[in-house]
Image (cartoon, rainbow, N blue to C red; front, side):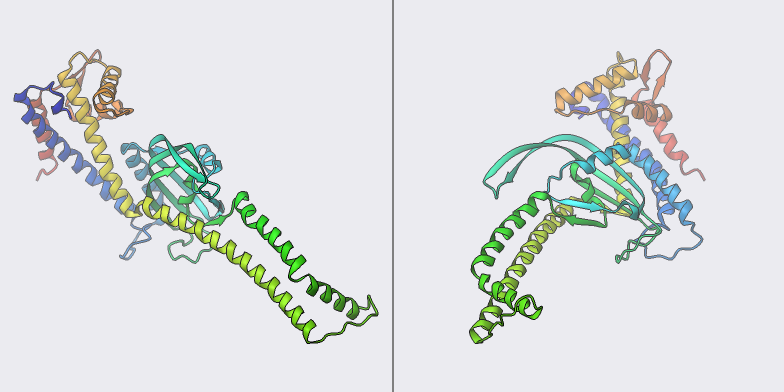
Amino acid sequence: MCLANGELPATEQTKFREMCSLLQSVVHFEYHEKLEALKDSYASLNPDQDTRKIGLNDDEAAEDFVEGLDEILNKANYEKLSEKEIGLAMKEASLFKLRLHIDFENFEEILLFSRGESTRTEEVKGLYGLHKRQISFVNFDRVVIYIKFSSKIVSRHPNEKPGSTMLKMFQDVPRADIEMLLPNTRLGMRLMDKLLIGVPALIGGGAILTTKIGTSMILLGALLGFWMGVTAEPVELDKATIFALVAGMGGLGSYIWKQFINFKNRKLTFMQSLTESLYFKNLDNNAGVFHRLIDDAEEEECKEAILGYYFLLVRPQLESAAQLDVAIEEWLSEKWDCEIDFEVEDALGKLLTLGLVSNTGDSLNAVGIDTTCELLDERWDGYFSY
């Protein structure tokens, strides 16, 4: 994208590519160390491990891991959701027409991070598909969730042991449906769903009671009254009467069973909707999550540094961080139709640390490409001094 912009002379473009390659190698090496540190701190927490634990302290490891994870998520441009934001998301109406009940006492710690927040519009169906309407909702492109289970949790799942942890990554998650990402949720029905089952059941039940088994109920009442001494008039039971009584009770039992099956089928439909949604939204689990995050953080660091260096190189009139920030955001918006909140402080922090940009106090200046390549090459050689 930078080269396609045409502001860099043709004689410098090959050197610029080499500079980018060196920068990516340096950043990759630095993040390899961060990855190894995360792997070490996660070793005793990993529910998918296939090695033995030797000399590992779970409590200290959990604290170190959360600190390291938070740093990587920040570098990968994720934002941590506050308890207030999580609470508001839980109260929003679900887009999947589900009601989930969550027992937060099962969790000792819950951390949620999101990236790529946007407002989307979708068409939803109602009244058995006869009515359609447009709804707007807030959507997260990526969501990472870290959970530490309570020491008092009781669960049949082998990975939900007391004090164990869980790390997951999801994509395209509506803010209103964040609760579906949590384990140990119980599925419930909305008031509308209960009415859709309950009202027809009451109407149908009343019709059956008054038509098909009304005679049987009267006969049964007369028998109970005679046996309990309420009435002295005996009830004669012949074959026809017994058959009518049995048939009536069978009809009532059959109706009750049918309504129970209707309830179970609707619940299974909801479960299928939830399962399909999670199946396609899940990106990674446990150790795989921070491997992916490390790669994301590397990419973000490189892109920020390359953009910052390029604009300071080709536009020397950009003298401050604010001017650089505006120039890059406008360029991305106008030329590439992409609204981005550019992390200019992260970009300049990396460039100043590497010595690729100088800050005299009054202005920022990019070092020449030749010097930049030499500095990056020296840093790379310094990693393997022997």
